[in-house]
Image: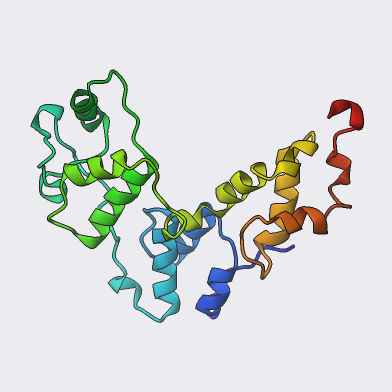
Length: 214
């Protein structure tokens, strides 16, 4: 299927219906003098505001591009994130290592999302403790998070891989790519479903493992 070309005349519904790669969103933002820094969700929001007829000089970055951060020894759970210019960097990683008594610490995706939420909403009451709370949640449902929903390809591959029939193919990523191409620029929801394997069974049959390989 042919990728849709962005036009100012397109409706918001039409824009949201199609899947856009981040590089395409950045190119659109650059062409129309919109902020080009941010997540896929943030770039999409700038474009939607443009399609609503908002003047480009009124569309400002949702978040500041750079935060200088704090040295680890100045960070405590009570540290105000916005007031202190706290950032998820090597210094804050050192703080979390010390806080949890570990040698290595990895930030969770949910912590990054929480940080961007705090910055976008200008939540001056948010502290490092809020990030600790998010980190300590064993499971965080991101399915309804608007930012997470922009990573449709990643989610598509994950759900395809969880399908019990995916193991029947010797090149599962090629199968996933083929099925993704079928839904990417269509009117279908940009999600994987088992029905896709059934519907396109003939086209992807060349990737099936032989009986001796199973």
